Image (cartoon, rainbow, N blue to C red; front, side, top):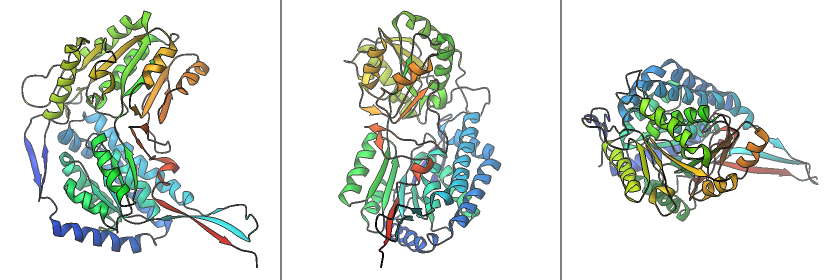
Length: 458
């Protein structure tokens, strides 16, 4: 019986240990979730919406408490952590407001019948496997639409987010979600695999690494279960020659440092006109060197620790390997002495196709900047990786910028912003960044039975 442990990445000290689910417990939670589905699905959509509205209220009212919890648990700077809690609340509120309408029956052209009607129905118990980097937001993306539609949830959070996962379950249950309609699991990977194989489970959603996604998708496919995957990203950012270079450099440098660079849709690879690259690099270096690295509970801190010492050491090793292979480190890249999982933010140039850093995801505060001769070269390099989550184009000629954005092989293309996520916008990628969509009406369409009811003319 594997337990979960929360370790404060600022101090390196273990905060709390949580008992894991035993094998008898696996069958118990499956039975409970399946039984709860029978009643939860029949609750009126407006009643489920009212419950989600109360969940949203709780996130807003408790945003500082929730922010402090994940700042301690996974190292997110406090203001960013509070903002994440508020974003999660806005997702629950969006589905509370729009969910009932999205579930209304749709009348089609009868096409020779008396009636052709499409109904949107739930499909049953689902498993969610969530990562640590956005503990509240990524759970809300999966949970809000699926509770709204009438599915029940078994939620396995990342091992380091056990404390916040308990609080999320408590918020949902206090708001009125039955305890068996949402069950928080401290389960092992093997136990999750067994649950996916169980006939009572109807689908699985995972946000995480490629390796985890591949394993979950293979298991789900073997047992004919629907899966949604949001995996890694190595997002490109293209700066056009008419952009306000100084302004853009400062915006994107700050964005790259958000959450210590631990975001799938962070702008990781930056493509700048060759004649402007030196000035762009200088500004990004200035922002990186001016950022305050330290305790995430200190409101003056810009960059907290990475999620763990192991994660920090992995990013430092990636930067060192890039330098060994010929890249140039302009600043940072080294681990800070003392307790915790801190590193100095790094800026790399001179990364070529032969280097590991060219195609791999660097999940930390590292900017890779390329000088390019043309927009065509920028687009070619932007698309020349296995990932396709999101990307952005920056310039003052909006028509031109949109045309370039349309050439990016990504699930989300932005002009003059990067990584924006809002409850009503679809979120997801292509290629090795996964498949399926979350948020908005698209998030309500993944784990449903789109059922046709057709009545013939007598």
